[in-house]
Length: 158
Image 1 (cartoon, helix red, strand yellow):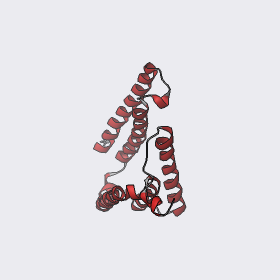
Image 2 (spheres, rainbow, N blue to C red; image 1 turned 90 degrees about the vertical axis):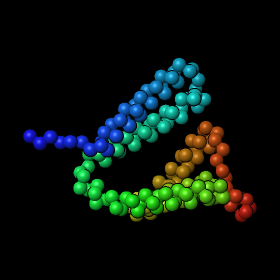
Image 3 (cartoon, one colour; image 1 turned 135 degrees about the horizontal axis):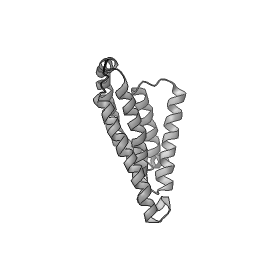
Image 4 (cartoon, rainbow, N blue to C red; image 1 turned 90 degrees about the horizontal axis):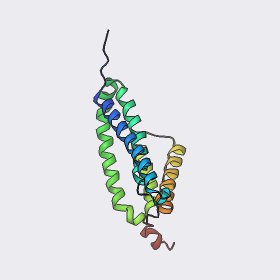
């Protein structure tokens, strides 16, 4: 009988999964005791972060179940992608105030999806635009966070 040994990535995913469940449960319990509506609750942001962590932990667990051989082949390519990701992120930070949240975030997401290997332009455009709009509506409108409009709009007269 061959004993299958799980990788460290799998166990990291399990730990993140447990932390995310703890965060979700505690946010809901603490919100109930706080007795305000969700948009005023100080537990909304921890709940959102915990939900994102929940989804990502499932991804990490599935990655940990993949074979080690495939991971070795991808490691060289991942270093190049990581460096490109870092470069694109730095450029995003530099142009964020000039281009504004919406335009710079759409460009960032397009570039990151290209780095990750996605080649369907309709899919890249759809995901980039919908994600940016959802983030803008969630933070800019619902949570009233002031997101930069961008100096470029002033320069072109908008």
